[in-house]
Image (cartoon, rainbow, N blue to C red):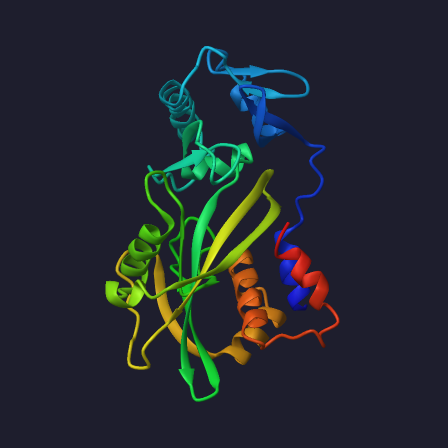
Length: 282
């Protein structure tokens, strides 16, 4: 195992031959696996299913009607078990993060439709002289996705109706009980993109990354039940765990690697350095 392996784990979704483009107004917004497309066939009033594409019905002409029509379908399919861990949390769907969304969709359905999801991931770190320590979270064992795996200090999806910094403040309070005056000091340091295939789903996602320097006496406490515990570890140790194990959730490992590069813990003497850099921005 290596750090490059962790990055490659995020980018195994290059072959789309088993998928059909999901289109709205003749614009592709996602990818639907052929196995899942069969589940959409009964909903002829919402979907137009063709050999090469699946599109939303032209009768659904605006944000509200598209979102409402799709929601009826998703709730019906959820009863069949297609979307474990239904969240009742809407994600925007469109051609890009900064473009006007054309509809919204239940969070747990987003990967099935191969729609780009966005999120904020926060590296919480402490300075100890010339060394860096990182707060690492562990996901709760009852999480519907990636239970028990290691995670970044704070992370959360980007829902409808919240700005990025608003989401940083919300997730920091819920996941780690970070006081607002500390959370507001989080610095945006970049974005990581990837395309992962998993369980006949494509995840062409983007994570907005923040660094948050924390006081040495601060100890995080989870308040929403999504994390089981936190550990404060030397950044070098975190790099070893990231490289040598699959303990971190796949995209959290990528956020770790980005942190190591930006803080000079991983440098250009590593023979995989260039490939790692490429893999962080697919």
